[in-house]
Length: 329
Image 1: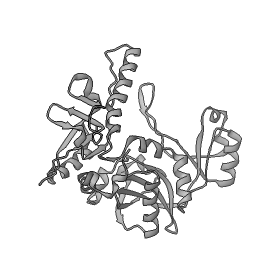
Image 2 (image 1 turned 120 degrees about the horizontal axis):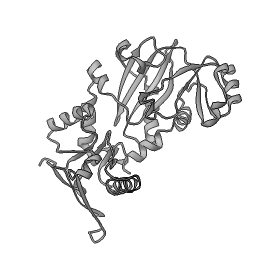
Image 3 (image 1 turned 60 degrees about the vertical axis):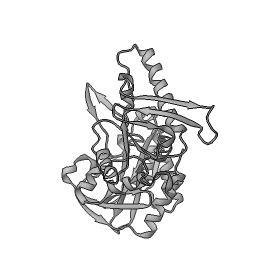
């Protein structure tokens, strides 16, 4: 008998990466219920959940409804938490909007978090815990990965001493944050920094300084369940994200030791999936840079033909029957 338990796909409307995964789920005959939390205020999304008064085997019961689908919460197979957008309630005053937004997060998200049956890819609480660069660097070092010398500080003197001792040094953000100046959207890249450029504005917040790897290429590794997809990215750029048109790609095989370490890294943070960035030095040694727990990968499948979307669909289709069901909230 075909398993009719659906996969919830939680994401924004125009998410090509999610579309790729949904296509493979459809081909497998797996029911999909896709929605975005921002749909809730316009009555395109409703949720009703009951706690208590049910059999002990069903601690949460209820329904989630979209204009085209209805799913029983207790029958959800897996949750693919991609790129959800939360409602802002712009028609309300500031205090009412803040109140309503909190109720959505704790009502809708809280209900989904209460489900103990489905596999999450990835649970937002796990993503948040793994999204701190200092914790990532420490975990990588504990697992035997090569980590460039790094300093996190808001002390200008400490920063200058570090740069003098480890130069050349780069600086990059501890967390990407939407930012505008004079109405123009800006982003930040990994940039070179000298001791002379460090001034007292560093005291305002911790900054990350890191010894620059004398690299020949970058390595992006996507892990889905226990499958790894490694792509070498060649360019002359310090930060390859600056210009995608300047990049070339090649599929590579990971050394067993490195693959085991990356799998162990995700296990440490209880994540079924993640995208790793590493730099390859002139001896071919990989240097750990960071993990993006919910990184983009769709363009890599397009450039290399690697079956990444199919791997996500396979993991989600298995749902709570897979060994990765340990990655529940």
